[in-house]
Image 1 (tube, rainbow, N blue to C red):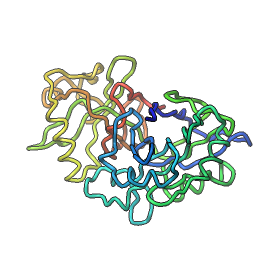
Image 2: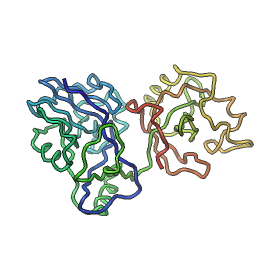
Image 3: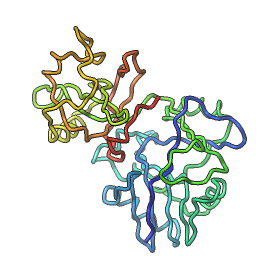
Image 4: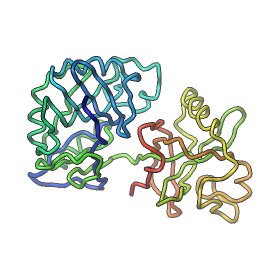
Length: 315
């Protein structure tokens, strides 16, 4: 049986690298996963090696149709909206139609009896092109054009970003490499939920943070972006993990009257409910303030494919 390894990760940057050594791909807005086909049986494994097969049975069933040989693909589980654009929030709904959820494959790790991770990216892509792709498993093709042209088009169509990859790069399982560079055109990242402000039988807002070494640091409150269904789902998870202790190492962080989200006083803390920092969520925001808080934060979805301790501030 083929054994999956943690995927290779890209390094976050503010601009795309330029030059003939680089190739560019869409940064898909979904769940990173490995798709495995082994003697007619498919599996889908998350980036932290959890089995997702039961959640996406139509992707698992389609995997053996790619080839009769043993296979491991790296890619992204993506939900498409009515316009055919990726929608991360759509992945959060159990009612999403399977026809709208696809797997975009962008790398080949194993085929037949060969481990392709030691081969350069250009060779892995050539082998990838020979597979029998058809919906719901699609190939994520490289983008044509200069970095400036690619960025302009990706921004115009509202996609999250671009990943630049060196054509001579080997696949480094479990490592964050500078051979892969990702640039996000919208500010989004994962945060850990450490508390909430109660409101009746649910919450008004959640309190989120990130780890710096071993300390969980408060980053701000998030009130916007919740549908009724998502609010109920998040509340069911965090309310089951209530804690008597504040998990944020930097609270309280305001001595006097504060603007909600810019600081929390000791008096305000008495009105909050704390939870064990177990739930990871994705948050969109406009910028970091001078006080290291989020401005105009909005909930995007739950991320169960990343452990809380791995959540760091993305500069």
